[in-house]
Amino acid sequence: MPIELNDVGFTYPDGSRAVDGVNLRVDDGERLAIVGQNGAGKTTTVKLMNRLLKPTRGDVLVDGVSTTTRTTAQVARDVGYVFQNPDDQLFAADVRSEIEYLPRYLRWPDGKREERCARAIELTDIGDHLDTNPKDLPSTIRKFVAIAAILVSECRYVILDEPTAGLDSRGLALLNTMLDRLRDEGIAVVTITHDMRFVISTFDRVVAMANGAVIADDDCGGVFLDDDILRRARIRRPDAAQLARDLGLSRRALTVDDVVDLVP
Image 1 (cartoon, one colour):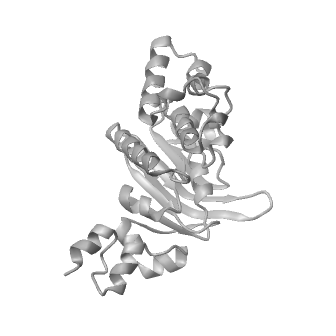
Image 2 (cartoon, helix red, strand yellow):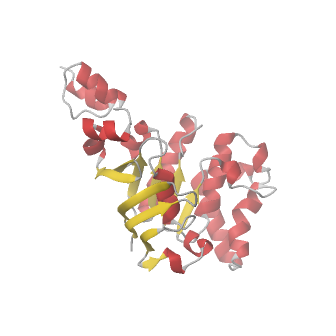
């Protein structure tokens, strides 16, 4: 069953409208990137998916059930949210306690708790840091601790807010390996990001937003090679695509490999 946003709008108490008339569906195992300038409505949209915000118009359904009939904690068991800044999420005195917090809170049996924690630790490669205070870890590792704290749950949808920010090449490789594993397990991943190279290399579907509305929902080529969408969403054409245009090559080039293949 999917996440569905049906004609969803959200207006803040001060009267400012964040999103209006958003229709969106996220299916099991899907990879979806939401792009657009700051203020386009990306963060509001994903926070509506796991009930960090409640719609002021329309309805959000997770597996066919309206989020308005459930608590934020209940929805979070299905839709995990990893904040851009791990310091907004982490609170325990050591990594092990951080990872074990949710299973202990839910009073899972020892076997289930150990299995889920071991999986999350292995997926994020943080096994060498379990006895360390997260505040004493480099930012890249803290980010993966925050991801592990979400993956320990049984959520089938994971939202990642700017996941590549601050990651080095090793961190990027680990992130991509983890995303492949999640897709193999049928877990959907939604990201909001300004890292277009990451989107093109990793995500099958791209939603572009502007002024609180969805203006495009397509594959990478359908979004990043459309001048009108780029202008309205105020996002840059990928460097490789711009290079291809400058060289007079195919307008379908998105990556450096595409460009190399097209050079006579």
